[in-house]
Length: 197
Image (tube, rainbow, N blue to C red; front, side):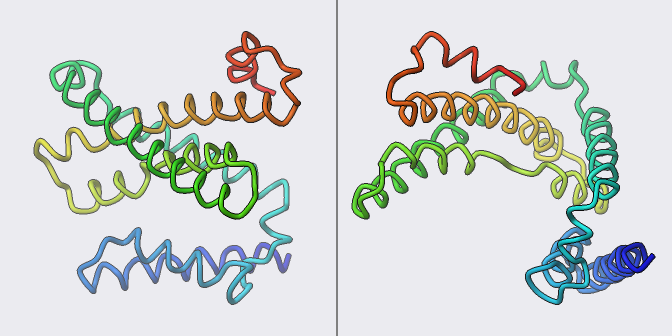
């Protein structure tokens, strides 16, 4: 019962933090993020690790993620996306791949200088690609924005995440091959990358 009360208290406090952020003329999602950090297990510990590890919490998070996916899907009208076509693809590929290259190179150099395997920098490059479209969607919804930037923002974030998943799984296949002592043949890397396990 205590865990439920704590979770409800955090939800109420996060909602209040969102309202406060709105009053300060900032996006409400910023208040939610700050509340999440402040009340989490690494700060005030109102939302304990025990709550975060509970199966019911994981089920709730999965349901909320499905809801967010449906909201994003409602924003992505394929007919509109076709009209933007090349712009979205070029922008997304350029910013995603450049992010991957720059972050991978930086971490590979750091790992090389510290005596760690340099190829591990690829993992950090793959992680750096992940963006959360939820804050962008929240701001667009809250301020009821409209225009060319708004219309390309959500599809751009979603396509960016698809690219991030593909790149990250491919990188993990390469890292697996390196850590397996080249025992994994190159032709199995794409299969392993697409495997759900």
